[in-house]
Length: 256
Image (cartoon, rainbow, N blue to C red; front, side):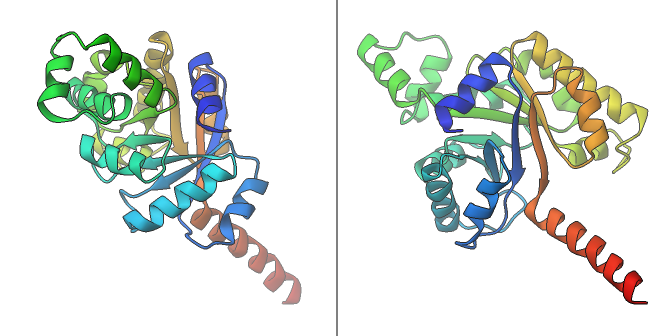
């Protein structure tokens, strides 16, 4: 999917699929395309990918018709602008916990290139000139904003965050969410399951797409029944390690 197709699918509540890509190898994009994903998730929060490398990845995947979504290092509007300037069609902002953060990120993604006091005045309700408003709408028509919901404070503020008009999707960060809930990496704990279902239901009721970056297929299928529509499945590194480990175990067993 290109940016416009992905944005339309999100708005229509259709299910879309992506995976985390960490490899910067020039041979990797063609392999990723063969998987059948709709978009690629490029993480610059936890993965040491530089600005130039990220931009090259975005440009290649975008040229191949796979929308590149970049998770920025922290929930800062300037980081969102940097990712979009480099070729990303959308951003995932990590650890968003307040409506103020969501609004600032929304402005960075949907009102480029405005910054600073001009944006703050518009967010505070000042009328935007008709010609400028039309320009901003055209320029940013296909930009996508996703926010990571991955803490208890984010859960508490979720209703207000979901009212931010520029928001296209919320994406659950399972590891950080489990830690914030006091049940680190206990992904089958009832409290974790309840939190995921709560986020998905609230997002869908607000008309916002809901997703998760996850690796357990049975749970993804269960949460899809609640309305989960953005599936970021596993990663290239995890899939490589699991596949090679499984196959080598079979070979070693067969060969004694």
